[in-house]
Length: 610
Image 1: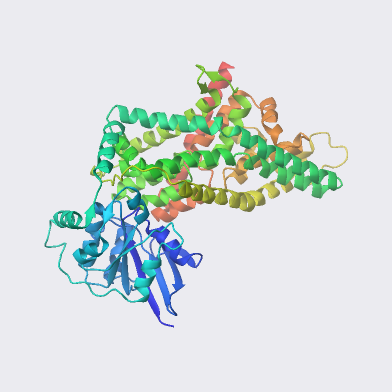
Image 2 (image 1 turned 90 degrees about the vertical axis):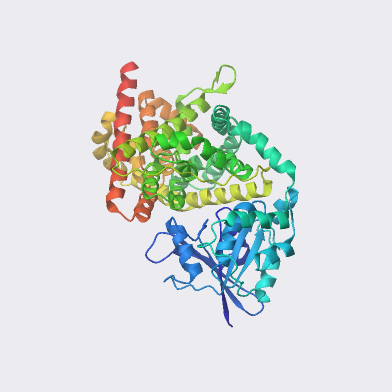
């Protein structure tokens, strides 16, 4: 069986990866290109007794590479790479709703003189907006085959498969040269005028909305209001779902208790697994609500505009609007956020964004925040409109944002090399969020969360239960049983180091496994306190903490989590992306240093005022 090597190439946000997933399904593998940190995504499928090997290249705007991602794409498209993949055909994926931006890259690829075809993606979205594209005329104007695709539909790639199976591609005539013809925009305008009919109502609607949403005064107010409402909703809407999860877990724990005799195994299940994992599961609704807002803002086309609005502020702090998307991604998890900095062309801006990304309030911090806010902040209304707990959560997120800007500004002042300020962003048309896409995005986020719960969090919860339960105290031991355990000894040994910031030994112990995943700190507290207080049931953890911690301690823990890099995976990603132990060590040092300093100030101040 012969093999056809296909390279998928295109601008960012053209649906290229969705098309790759549709073609390959589960028959794909992800690794890094040899010698660089850029991700390599390769898959395969069989087409008419022919093996098709397909490579999803990093998104690029031009073959004039300005970032590591674009360098990889350029080298493979030009056939000059050393990565072991030499494409037989280039499939350039373009967004049918935004051809004005994407066609220039098509012309650049065509000038290479290599076999290629164009996948006109998102045709369903173009039709809904009233955009009419004469596909044969477009193919004639470009001089290469053009096939319509819909990457989110089950048969949306049939035309592309037929084109690949029939070898309906060849060497395009080289009629345009990017080196000699500087007016490529004029050629794109001619093609659009001949082949595309754009409804005037679409552009009029976009212009009217942009006049308000990009206004220098009203725009930031709208953005701030959206973010404020988002964090209010995290608390206001999640309550019933959390109560339902709590009730189910408590019922399951009680049912197991009725079926099993008392002993070590029952303690493991109730005090270890249910008390630990159940506490983390309660925060799933809040995480999903947060992601629903982020995905909806992305679907509407608002996020690039938010980057534009924040560009001036971010530049004053040492960043640019290009840092906005990676930093926003870091609210989900700092790891993909740090990896998303590959699209930032300026090396200094990219490094600065990597260094401050861990300061963004990732979803793994949310369980800690909501647990302590629920335990120590009353659920009351402010001004008859706002939930006080939601206000405190918003304040913590705002504190993280301010920290990002402050640290970036300090780095800018210390840097000897200044970056040029140039922000070029694609502003897509506004559109209504697709409910199916939102559901897929939330389903993926839930699967990732549950995989963490069933994997590393479960393992560490069981380990912490073991450390808290063994060895058993000898007869005549007068203190709490947990003090004699491995966990008690470790916690008491480290407690003096954290005493100035108000941490007791139980908190210290929960921080240790929390280095693997921040959420584990919550399950760790549930496990430790369920053992030490003989209290079973995750719903009681908040009341236990409220009775045994001071408000100063709770505020200190919240402050610690604003800064501390409680995630080994994030640290490893910084090392991989910077390829520097120096930068990695600096990030760990300054983050832990800020965490200890501000926790100390908050605890000592709150304790003095109490």
